[in-house]
Image 1: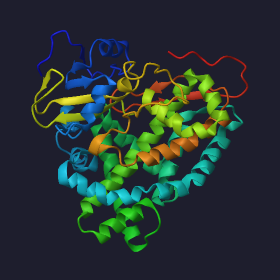
Image 2: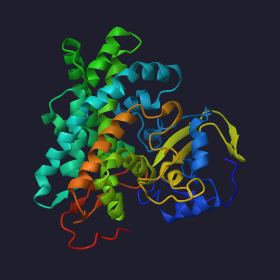
Image 3: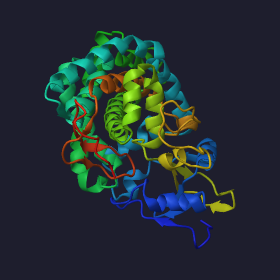
Image 4: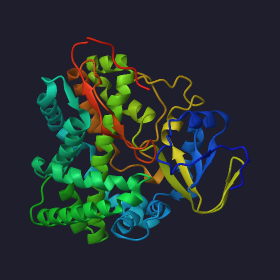
Length: 405
């Protein structure tokens, strides 16, 4: 790239790097981009918005394994062939065939079951006045919501959750050290998806997998391999996003107890709360693109092959675009970028928005005055992030919520 020598540089492969760090904030204040060991990081709202729609950029995640030292193997092959990383006619064809399975009407029918599930999970720890939020709520909720949508027994949630958790390690900068675990999980999930497809071929129902199988049966433009890849991606992505985003949501609300109380009083703000959380603390901390051709953008020459990381949280809290960017679930905001944008806008965004907008108001009503209650463990604040452990106590307000750093 042709850039000024004084442009900040980030080592985004360092597990200690944080997209929410003071250095990122300082860089955003002086310019719209920074240099990285991969290429370019885009920090401001307007530039992220423009580049997400720029057809000179293509999906940039396909080379993620290779850039982190993982050459070949089952994960790299599945990753490059998944809808997330396809381009051109293959991407448009498969996306068009999958869209009917993500019908909002189908999801809306599940909402009462999501509500009952959330209540059931809270019932299990409400009397104790404390919980390890990730293992006692976020993970089982995400996995059982997925089981409901897939039309599989909810009792199997631990199996699909374990595989999804292990595959999720591939999205961290530590992918290379975890690749054996990732491959084992992918193998298990491939076998599970194959069994589901065979069952729905013989016994179709009114669930996501049946709709995908029917699309495959009625249109030979969706191959067997593409169908299986799509189901594996669906199981993994739905689990990973909801689990991580719920943990990030609660942790954010711990810093804004007045907003938590407001949500308890105003459950109609559930959808707005989801949008605000994903603006200020998204599990997808950057959206990755790659330059398909050499081009100039706002005085910067970007050669073909350059990786461009569009920092979603930095864009979402950019004071140039949002003069009052403080967390506020009643504020009217410009769209955030946590679900990507352009032709690669997340196909399952309505699912994630729906299940979290059910869970958050219910949690706010039942987990009053939440506060940290032990050691918090988190993934790196880069790539895809979230919490490994988030212990909280709740109940009578016998002390002020802890001040979080």
